[in-house]
Length: 397
Image (cartoon, rainbow, N blue to C red; front, top):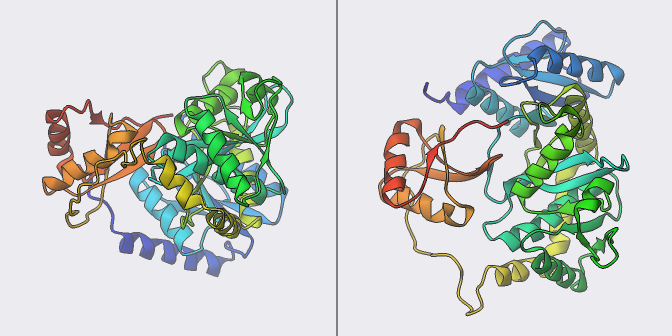
């Protein structure tokens, strides 16, 4: 695997191309939505055509491509590897050159999870899946409480003043329901949806997924990922995604990149829907809405609530809080999968103890431990010796 390109080099290339685009008149002041195209599995030309068509419909935004050069009038920033593509995307987001970017196979840091947008198969109404990738917290119930907040943030940004929140009937649903009711009683406004099954209250059944009963459907990220895939690929027999607007933006406190995820198997309409989703989030000022909602939630005792969920019945924390000093940071270019979400912190500390820098993240297949590619084999060996059933991360659809 080639060495990771330096951020400074990437930034320099991006600024040079921006200056050239401004000089040529190709980079106006309207909303800029990035679209990375490397890794597309349904034909890059389909994504490019989808981007061209949706860009041509309105004057308020334009799509900017990042990836291998294409025959198109759209503004392009070349990248030959996925690593280079994501670095350019991040640099352009951080410097305000893009208002949002749509990408694939993107790893969010722990604490950040994405909110997908789906059209209900039964009634055709839009609803939001909170969440579909990433992880908001290592504790399941804590994560689902945060997912509810993330979903509310996105729904409000999209113009739903009082989104109705439902909780999918998965493990931890009742504990999440209790915690959200406590948060609401403490002053954070939450309107709960009512299931089509009258005995279920705000706990959503499979019927509610088909009907799109709530505005925000809360679940853990891996369940949300499956729900999104099933709804999105139903009409194609599982071969490609044809419904919905993708897995959405990563949300997390103090996380400001509007980085949105779609599948590599996203079809023409999903790409266009994802672009419109990104435009609406940019216009609705997602980061400002997030700040306001986090402030309201904290005033209602969010931190105390999360702390109580992270504590076992004996009043002791559920995690091993051994202090381990992190080695000097270095670029993390390789992923290791197979570590359970509840063990990811301990796995990172194990690698640190052996003088190797590592970070934790969440990909679309689950938790990922990230290291520099030079340390990949040694890290795999250390983890396997300790009993982890790990393997080099395999890219997902």
